[in-house]
Length: 203
Image (cartoon, rainbow, N blue to C red; front, side, top):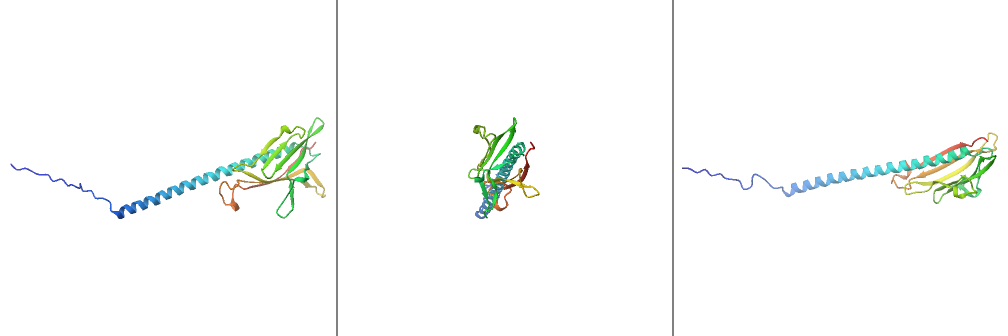
C-alpha cells in the first residue's frame, strides 16, 4: 500500500512589501491626505466669507431702511439741523457731512425734536424720537466682530438757484467686516458703500 504525502507551502504564496514600496505608498498617502486637508480648509474659508458677506449686507440694509423711514416721516418744512460740531472730514480735510442731525416730526400741531447720532469710534448709531425723553432711544447699529460702520454722514442738498434745501437729505455710509473674512482688503465683497437721498414728508 502506497501513502501519498501532501506538501504545504510554508509561505502560502505571500510576499512582504519592500522598503521602497512602503515609502512610495506612504508618500502617496501623505499627498492625498494633504490635498484633502487643503480642500477642507478652502471650503471652510469660503463658508466664512459667505457668512460674513451676508451679515454685513444685512446690517447695511437694516441701517439704510431705518434712516430712510425716519427721514421720510420727518418734516420737510423744518428740514434737518446738523450738529455742527459733528462734522466729518475726508483725508484732504474736506467736509463730507455731519454725523449727528436733528429732525422734526409733526405731532398735534407741533413738532417733536428727534436726534440721529453716529459715533465713529464704536460705529454706534442711536435714534432718539424725542430728545425730551432719552429713554426712547433706539440702537440702529454698533460695531461687532464681523461688521463695522466706518463712516456715516448726512448733508443737505441745493435748489436749482443755489439755495440750500434742508428737506432733501443726502446720506452716505461705509461698512466692512473688520477683516474677519480674511479677504483681500482692496477687493473685499464685504466692503459696502451706500449713497442715497431721502425727501422728507410735506407738511
